[in-house]
Image 1 (cartoon, helix red, strand yellow):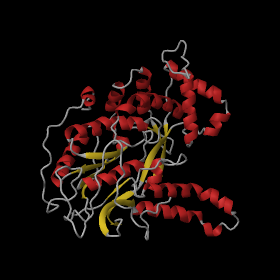
Image 2 (tube, rainbow, N blue to C red):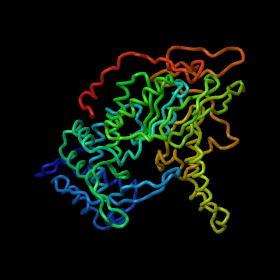
Image 3 (tube, rainbow, N blue to C red):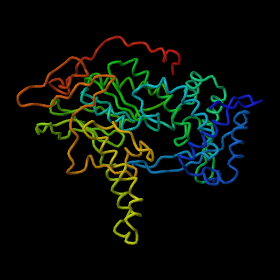
Image 4 (cartoon, rainbow, N blue to C red):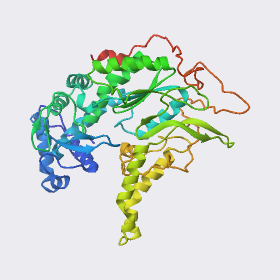
Length: 460
């Protein structure tokens, strides 16, 4: 459908873009902002007029965002609370207009190993890629960025946005949203000098764009032999040796400091991917990523031989949260509810459980798309959705790999009583570590390749 140009307006924003943004906001639901107006009230009280005001002000350059409502919520797996920024319904529509325009410009340049808040990608895809690479690489860096959404530098975000859009109104409104104050529960306003509210519609694309230059392209340029998966601010880096892992981690500490971020000193760690073929000793042999705990687990071959494989399964924190959710139903007291009523209540959970079973089957996590009525990350972290792959009595998925039409995958070689494990100099096929997990091995010393995208905009 052709866009309707705004006649006599300084900024070319079509009314169809505003309507599409409203459709997305309505589908995502959400709580009221500082004005207390709900989605139902916004729609019932002159929807056409409300959307016209947003379009008229945005296309005229006179739209100024209201304060963001601060809402404290508990963290996914305990350990305190985090503050979400909840915009008003009208502000969410305006942010969605800008986010859609900006996503169309930057989606094509994002790294293929970036999975967070991107179309046709989910957290399960990231877990599946991490699962396969833990068989190929012996060492993992589990990264945790401290207070990422509260620490992002505005000047670097604006610089990245300006490099990828010619629409002046996109840059203008990004600057205004970054500087919008936050209204605390006591109704006082708190001014901010950095960060982007976690919970706003435009924050995901801004966070991805920032991390694309601050982490993705930098790591691919400086350390081309390592692999990684990143979901928003959660990342895992795969290395071929402990020496390389320590070198990359030291460089990451410096890089994060350059862009105004900080790695959590207690949660960021180096992990050894121990299994039947990699028998070295190291103090850490497990890590958590997107609600899954990766650690040595018992697996079984087709011929019934058992061996130890480095596999993911539901984390204890996520399993505990699921149990709490199931207990909150108090099914033993719902004697007045019919079977149909109970089915309507638990069907979303059953659908999530079924999709996870398929996602962690023989082909590994990430091979199946999440259902449309569920948020992809909440499914992985266990928000009201069942996980059974790590429950007692459930056999771990077999150590096989999906065949990809784009790149071949090398099959994991479990130990055999008649043959030893083969070795290779390639990090993609090397499964047996050095004689000791603590003895460093020299990684590839090839010169880092240049990155034209990074040369165009250097976040310094």
